[in-house]
Length: 116
Image 1 (cartoon, one colour):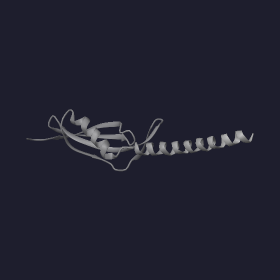
Image 2: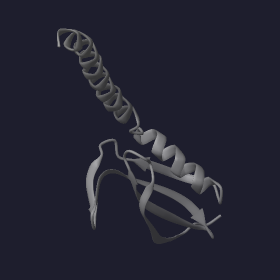
Image 3: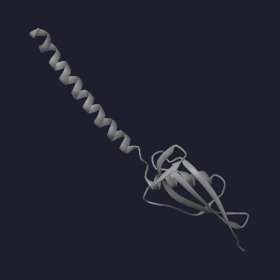
Image 4: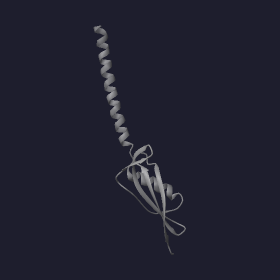
């Protein structure tokens, strides 16, 4: 029995050390996955610029809690404005703070006709 316990103890210590190291590495990877507000705004701007140039854009710097049905996450609130048919159109968006996915997009038309 003494031989079995001698070979089992190092295996147990190694397994525990590996498990703890794995948990720490997993936590580090999940923390580094969160995108910055600037990265998210850059992605949204790129998508809008595929259609027409952007006049202005902004994004909040602090994530806000968001819930839609069973989905609970943190989001950044931002906006993009551009000219469409000589009118300034503002788009407001909510983007997931972790993935950068746009969860909501709302078009606001201010009826501001621009003259040449």
